[in-house]
Length: 570
Image 1 (tube, rainbow, N blue to C red):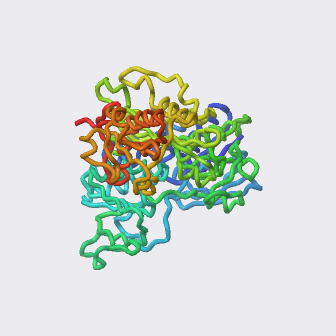
Image 2 (cartoon, rainbow, N blue to C red; image 1 turned 90 degrees about the horizontal axis):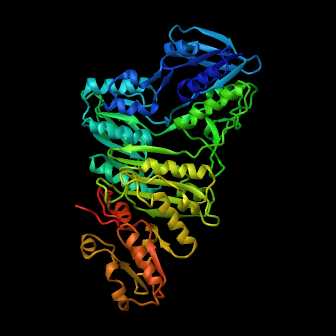
Image 3 (spheres, one colour; image 1 turned 180 degrees about the horizontal axis):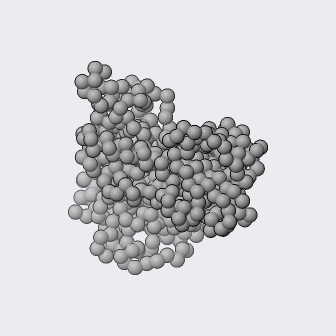
């Protein structure tokens, strides 16, 4: 059996190695148009920032190591330009010699990946303007910084690459600006959760220009006297001037080859595959960033450009190429990102995506500590869990914090994959020791809260409800933090009665009015709501507490030290 693989990196390289492990006799040939067969896309910003110092560490495998270990014939700088499914032949362009030739296959795997999205903007050929997708792109940016010593950079786009690159350029000492059309960074997060990242990046000195449209680029000095400096042109705004600019707008499935071969295309021009990673043409498979998959929660078709799914898809395609019967169940899009000393992670659907998918959803916010509060070093996080109202099906989750964020997100991703309901989170038997967690793990706590909602022990209101609260005296707006906390910042219209005084001061409140209660994290206000409800009040707890409100409305940072009930420690 002769297998040709178009493209390396995550999908193609993992498939090639798997095919060899399954079939020692197979003839395996990889054509990769870049100069690198398997490299760490996710590590590219960290090489630019000097965190990864050795260029060779970016390359997971070289053509030589692939040949030596797996007996795979690797051709870098070779681009497959055409596929003839009828004759089972491909046309290959040797980019160094310029020669074109044909090669035949029994099985063909397409792993072309995705290319940086390049909108039709003026000035994309300017020196000092870059994109970041390949090792070559990374080396070009790195060399430019080493040779030209820019003091400022403007980035178009605030997704994974944009945020990671902004951090690394900032740590090199550059003044960094991020510009994008959406009003919050990281579309995997809902806007209120992204607020914590906004605050952290602004503290680091990164300028965020959100909700603005990039219209093009031009030389800051057309005469060339100030060569290299660039104007980023914005719609209805003054240009932004910088020493260099980088497009981080996102990626688009690279499927021109598949399209010209007549393969069926789907979402965003991606390659349509079944759960065996088979395309619409016999004996042609596809994997990675270029393929259309099924979202495991919504069931809708999606394109998810992440290394983990690409690796698994390559393995599944390899199994089936070798006569197996492996199936890809779809993806949750689980992801995690480092933002200076903070971590943000998500899995499943965001609330925005769930609503867009037509799902009726509810949510809880909580602000637990990363481990037991009495053990030194505990740090807070914000966790959001989204579930379906009717049946409590888990839909997704997001978390932002300093430590333990990835652990909780992995637990929740596993729960979603296993089909658990949100109510079952309270029963998970999770590891506990003071340096690592609490006896009530944050995931268990989310389950307790959702169980309380089901049993009408917890009634909630949210940050987006604040503007609609009655302020005409027909409702009680109650802040149950300490007087000191209240004096340092509170929401207009809320009166202050600390939770520990509430039982003795119930006579000050009218049980005929709905009570909207808030504290710093949601714990003390929940206790206050339980007191009020058992004394005949209709009480609602502000989910997420004042800390969430302050991040959204005032760009306040997530505190680094808090008590178990959310009080900020000095």
